[in-house]
Length: 194
Image 1: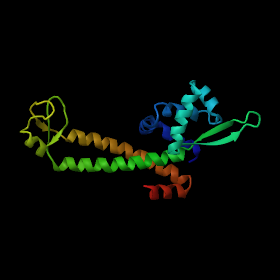
Image 2: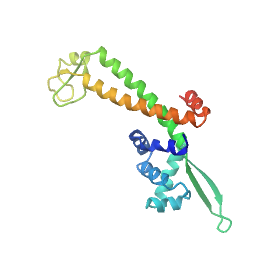
Image 3: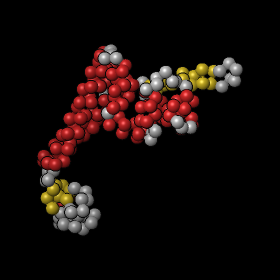
Image 4: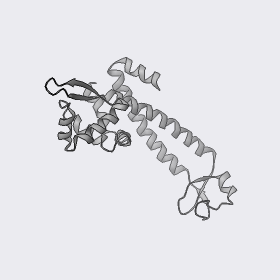
């Protein structure tokens, strides 16, 4: 599996969400730029992205903080100004997504276990779902809207969580395969990093 394989990570919805939390332009910038990896200058990336160079630089700097992009700076001999040449580190992005998925997976599994132990209640207004102990404390009246609390079927939530866990597992498996095939030290780094 080569470099093109790891670039497929941008196809995951979770990656889009992750990047857009960093910057609202991050996902679109990387998706557009991925198709033209020969373009490395921030001004040319801005032309490609059809936006102001200040917006591109801001986004690149935020992504650089996470290690998703990196740059080399070269001083122009004529003007004395520095030119920045950027590149995407898809392996770093994959490692970050793997770490985030591992954490989400652990939390979802705990939440599913919690749902097996407790009974839950909710009002018709769909305010926050309450465990039995809290519902009983409020005499089965919603503390948010004062509507009657009724038994809530947590199994629907569990099924949704299982579907989401399945997606996470598939993405983690893909990342693990890509990184382990691009050098065993990537996988070892992930295992130590997480």
